[in-house]
Length: 547
Image (cartoon, rainbow, N blue to C red; front, side):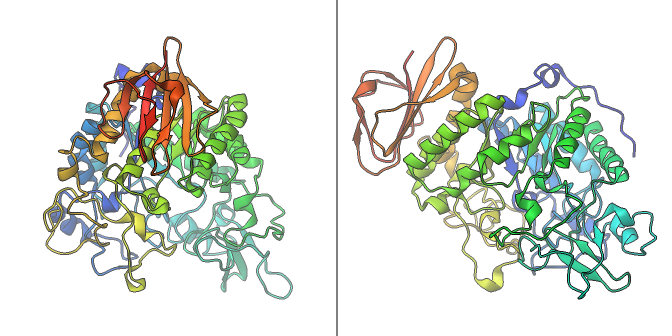
C-alpha cells in the first residue's frame, strides 16, 4: 500500500524544535490496554507460523486500538507525544525487538489500518506519534536474513556480518552477547561461517557498511514518515557502526561486546544521513537515540554538531540512587558537557528495560512525587514511562513466571485502569504478566480523583511546564549553599525565574534564603498558593517564584 505524504496542520509544522517543549510518554503496547479481544482472536488465525508462545496467556496483551481508546486520558494528563515500543511482526524472541518486517504490524497488536487510525486520532488531539526503530539487527526469520543464510553466494550475504572461524574452529573474536553473556557469534553449519549478534542469536546484526542496507532502511523510514509518524526512538543506535577489524575485546565488562561500548566513527555518518532524511519532512520528525553508554561525554557525541540525534537519553541518571548529592553532581557534569555542544538533554527515570525508579529508590509515594517534580522541571525533554504517573512499582515474579530473556519483566506489568478484578481490561483470565503491586489503589480510576495524589502531580507539573517560560525554555543553574540533602536549582527565563527545591530526606530542613517567596507548586497539594516559610518538609518539593 502506497500512502502519499499527508498534509500536516500548522501546529505540527510551525516549530522545528517542538520536542524541546514536549512531554513524551512511553507506551509498552503489550501492557497498555486491550480494546478489542474479538478482533485479536480473528487476527491470530493468520499469525505467522514462527510465533512461539512464551507464556500460557501470551495472547492477553494490549493492542493498538487500546492505545487509541486511551488517548483522551493522555490528553487529560497533558502528554504531547507518545513513543510506542515495537509493534512490527516479530517471533517475539526479544518481545518485538527481533523484527521480521519493518513495514507492517504484528497481528497480535492490530493492523496497518489500526496504526493509521491511531496516528489520525492522536493528531486530532495534538499528540504526536513516535515509533521504535531497530536498525542494529533484524529477526533471524526476517526474509533478508533467511536469504543471507541460504548460501555464501546469496545476494544478501553481505547484508549481515559473517566471518570465518579461527584456525581452531572457535568464534572470530571473544565478544559476548548482551542479555545472555554467551558468545556474540553463532556458527552456521551449512556455510561454515559465524554470524554476529550483539544480542540473542535470533537477532543477527546488519552490516551497515553495505549501501543496499542503507537504501532499504531509508525506504523503511520513508514508509512510516509518509504515514504521518512524527519521529523515531532508535534502539541501541551506537551499535550500528562496526569497525572492520572486529578485534578481541580487552574491556573488563562482560555484559556487552566491545562495539557496544566503544564508538565507531561510521555510526555518526549514518546519523547525519538519517537526520537529513527526517528533516525533509514537514512534520519535523524527531530522532531520539538509545545511546546506552554510561558517561555523558560518550553520549553527547551522538548529537554531532547539531546534525545527528535531536535527543539522547541521559542514562547515567538511572544508575544513581535517590540521593540529592548524586543528582547535583550529574546536573553539574551535564551542564559542563552539554552546554558547550548545544545538546538538549532527554531525561528518563524508568523504561521497559529497567526496574521502575520507585522500586530502585525504595521510596514512598512522596518520593514518587518529588521524582516527578525533578523530572518535569529540569532543563531538557522529560520522558514518562507508562504507569510511573500512578506510582507503580515492579511486579514480583517467581522464576517460573519470568518470560523475558533479559529478566526485565518487573517494569512491564499491565497497566491497571480501574479497581475491578480485571482492572478495566475486557478479559476473563489473567494477562500475559501479573498485575503490579497495589493495583486496587494504584490505578487510573482511583488516582485521577485524588487531587493530592501522584497522578495529579504529573498532570499539574506538565501543565505548569507548558505555561511557565522559565521552566519551558529557561537556562538552569545549581543553587549552592543549601543542605546536602536538598537538590536545589534555578530555571532562569528572560522575564522570570524560579527555584526548585527538593528534600530527599525524611526530615524538615531550614532554607531561609527563600523565605517569603511565592509558592507556584508544592508536592503536598499539587497546587500553587501561599509563601515559603523557610522550612522544607521531609520528602517534599516546591517551585518558588524568585523573579
